[in-house]
Length: 410
Image 1 (cartoon, rainbow, N blue to C red):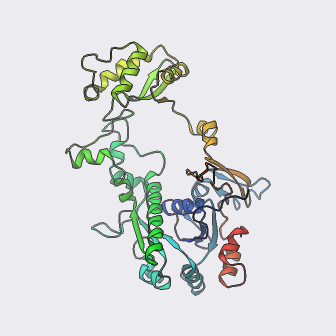
Image 2 (spheres, one colour):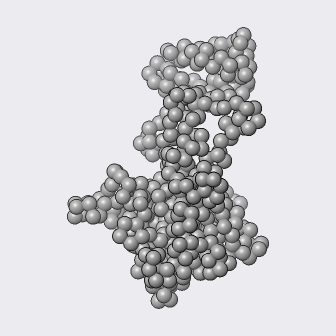
């Protein structure tokens, strides 16, 4: 069977973004089958091409660093073509104009006003192509008292409150271990783009979708947000234990630690029955009581676990039906059979590195008969201007049209 083209097959995305938030959005759209043409600055390209170590070089390369590839860049540019255009030059603007006229979606994360100065403000973009959907990502929003402020992930994590609820305690603010503000902004942008494309089917017209690192983090505050807006309570970092459920968190055992999630009174009864506790124990019978006495609950549970090895304890918890798990290192995650079974690893052919394995897309698709229709073939992250000649030839009308061009992997 031929590899499925994906639900966005035939959609052309022009990706003007760099760093992580915008490029991640572009990669998600590419995973869904869109043709994504990444426009980069000649000479250096996307900032992340220089972010490292780690870098990798092809075997037998010159060894002078000229061929090195950034693993950071590779994490958010799978599936794209690269063309280098100087947007301050007449030639670069001509090719970008041609791309815009053909595109369905344009992604940009310039600081506010930069595209206008280049002659490609949103009004101009929609004049060139009234069906165009424009995704614009900023750090803190396009307007407001701090609109246009530069946005970097860790700064946004702090400003958006995330670091205040992450860490071992209130005096130990910590960033999340991945650039989660950037990634959330990219994902939020994608669902805005998909909604705008759907609306275009009804109206025939494109529109501008705006989000920011700030908006995307505030948008996932969940119960920490309503804890303040409704109850007037300020959430604080509490380490590895849930602020509203107990016992729920990381607990020491004889040779390490395990995580458990006793998320209901039924699970509390199972847990107690499985480890010889009275579920109606005074002061611990209900979740609000246990949350109020969290430190005592932690001590109680760790005393129960003290004689258990982690593997035996996890087996026992599975046996009694209490959700539990280990804390895996990144290498353990990527060598775990469950990870591979979910299609979360993809092999791609890189222009200089050969076959490389990348983290794969997090979505799978199935038809009405249960047959999987998920795309399995993916392009490697591109070399800078690696597709430039082909893209320019296509725009000049000297090569294949967009669909045929994409099908042939140009």
